[in-house]
Amino acid sequence: MNIQANSQHSLLLVDDEEDIRDVLRLPLEDLGYRVLTADNAGTALSVFNQEKPAVVLTDIKMPGMDGIELLQKIKHECPETEVIMITGHGDMNLAIKSLKYEATDFIIKPINVDGLAIALGRAEERISTRCQLREHTRNLEKLLQEKTELQDHLSSLGLLISSVSHGIKGLVTRLDGGLYLLDSGIHKGDTAQIAAGRDALRQTAARIKKMVQDILFYAKERALQPETVDTAEFAREVIATVQLRTDGKPLALQYDLANAPDQMVIDSESLHSALVSILDNAIDACLKDTQKDKHRIDFIIEKNINTVVFNIRDNGIGMDRETREKIFTLFFSSKDRKGTGLGLYIADRIIAQHNGHIEVESQPGRGSCFRIRIPDKPRTPGNRS
Ligand SMILES: Nc1ncnc2c1ncn2[C@@H]1O[C@H](COP(=O)(O)OP(=O)(O)O)[C@@H](O)[C@H]1O
Ligand SMILES: [Mg+2]
Image 1 (cartoon, rainbow, N blue to C red):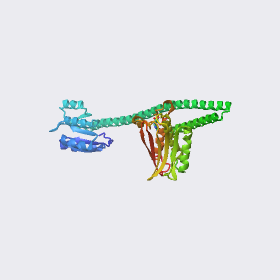
Image 2: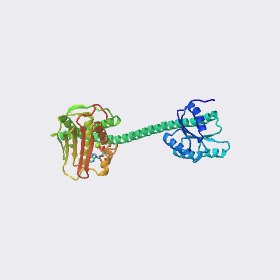
Image 3: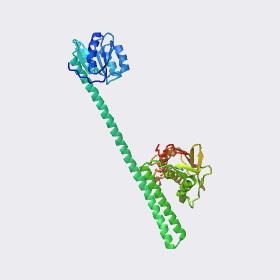
Image 4: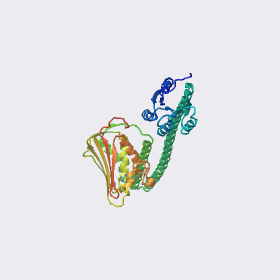
């Protein structure tokens, strides 16, 4: 007998003759199978449903439900099951019919164990081929996903380059304008014009710096570096960064620290950048608004239970619901060439890194309020959450 113990699968042996079940059990166990038995098709089905054996070896002719019907039910339930039919000498037609219903093979009584081993070997091969196929499919799916990610990345990069190029173009025009003011001011000895030119250049330099910072934040998310900062000093620095844009405009930029904590534990560089993005948008929204004579932006820092809340409220143009729903989307901007659509996407990411979140309320024509809540102490310092 040429038997190789090679399977770790369960095998369900179905035959109404006890002798056959007894005779076959041992060689099947020697082949490595965990052998389950049933003496009729009904019992076989319930054993099958419970144990889901990989291989079923069934007699074709049985009282009650016959082997062909059992085969059909098993294939319907679990098409990958390898079903080998046992047939009598005169049952060739039934055997061929069973192949139509996708039996793996049939063996003829009296059963020769070598023949049985060959049929089972074939079944095992099919099982292992299917496993390999599944593995290949998994690998392919992984590759496909990587390719899609790469494609997404490339198209984001394309969008980034195009939005940044537009931004830079605008800034270069501003640089030219500032230089012109400065030059002609010097030429005419007009100190007011010189000052205006210098302010314009300073402002443009600040915007270039912010844009580069945004691009760097976008390109690489760095780990949070929390430190204890003085709240008043931090707020002053944030305001100072955007103040130039409001100077000389009917736009009051005020901050209120009456209920603020004295100190905060934050990553000051990234949070500074996020708040400046939100304040910049508030300034844009006020400057764009032609409905009101006076505009005002309030920057309020408050201490709450275990949180620090940063409120940035403006009475600018506000947003409709459709805009409001898209503002955190990468590259979304309603400012044509003047916007990159990076600001809020990155701000949102930075606040999430601080384990915080941003709430936005806005009404078209009335203004907007951005409320940022972060825990007063990062849960795990340096954690990217
Ligand atoms: N305070 C605000 N008032 C009105 N609209 C705003 C305000 N803040 C953000 N938005 C809207 O959200 C969009 C996305 O903002 P952002 O990500 O900073 O990109 P960008 O400023 O480059 O357009 C803006 O284009 C604008 O439509
Ligand atoms: Mg912006």
